[in-house]
Length: 382
Image (cartoon, rainbow, N blue to C red):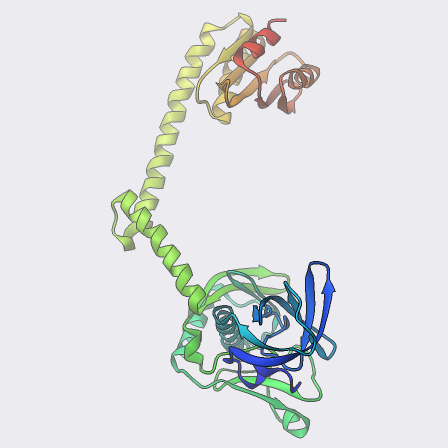
């Protein structure tokens, strides 16, 4: 263990005093080194700590050889003594996420023998990649087991082991390790080689929630949240459900059933509306039978309705049929057909002249244009 890494001695340390051993400007930031530090550098899937060193902010922390580099927004005099302060909210959040991941990964390894081969701690969620396919139906049971481990509130052991003691120790690792290896143990649930910071007791993780499961490469990717992130996630879910509950006049635990009913009703209404539109389009087409080229403007037609009306009128008018829907402010969607013609040259010139975009088959095109109704009508009348 590097004697200057205070975060290994006490992951709950938030304030410390150190001497500045180096300060170099790099672009708009300064790279500062100290004789000891509680700032955890990015590594092992865990983001770096943030906070302050004296009067400057620590924006990022990286390990470079034997040195720990603090990327700061200002300079500090070499040789000066400064007080460092960790952003505890961020540190504790990262510890909750990392420790929760250990518990879940340890349980999965003990049940299936699968390894955690990819771990990313994002700003909102954690993704974990496993090298085997965990049955999706097992996910609720795995989640329950992880939370039961949290409720046991077991002490978390972090220690360096080497030599014969390491050889006799069973632990999770992506590769064989030598020298002094830092082992993080949740008694009864996991023992893993890890360089990250962790909670003192499993109960501090709060809870683990598995948000998603998907097949990924030859295994499975899971997305999870722990602790404060889980609380925030469920608070947002509860607010969304409250809004749905109010809109549907449904009890909070009945919104799913009510939403399914509304969806079924909406689909039935859409089907009936489609039939009524078809009847209307049939009547409109009869008005233009044998009229040759036709230009029609209609309000609030969907792209599908535009297509169906153009099909109906184009089949009987005997010429080019152009249907438009929209207004002069927002522009117009169009559907243009000519059963016996080729529209490719026409639509290219039309789009160039009227700020349009779109295309399709030689005898049928759809798209939109930013011209006014007057400009469209004038162009088509040429």
